[in-house]
Length: 155
Image (cartoon, rainbow, N blue to C red; front, side):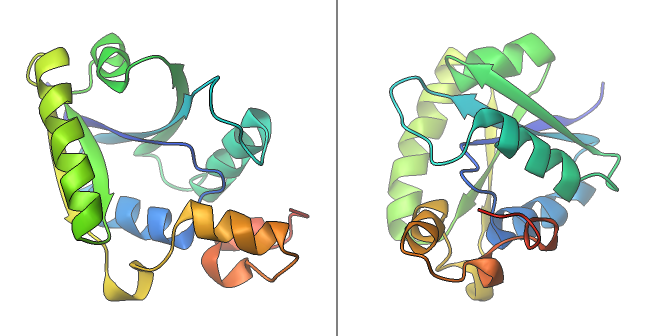
């Protein structure tokens, strides 16, 4: 039985913090599915198509990473694709409090779905997609926070 993890998120946009976390998790799993959760109630800055394309580009040379998308509960998506693990990053204590509750609910709904937490490296703990979106919307240079593959993209 292969160890499959899902790293769910909006990835609006993907940041260097996301990439670093996935790279650190690669030795732990046979496959990591970076999956965009589509939430019709949430307004994204970038289209789903763009975000999927960027994820594909960023992880093109990593055979253990696949890109996916889903609607509804993450735990149900995990069951559909046979994943037994969720991968989540923790930047601070607030992240932990929130993620702990979600992981407990996912464990029940997902019938034993385990959440694996990785603590952000200090160099990335201040980076979030929300902050990067604000920089982009304000006309600032977000390139220090974006993977190399996105540097040439007009955001």
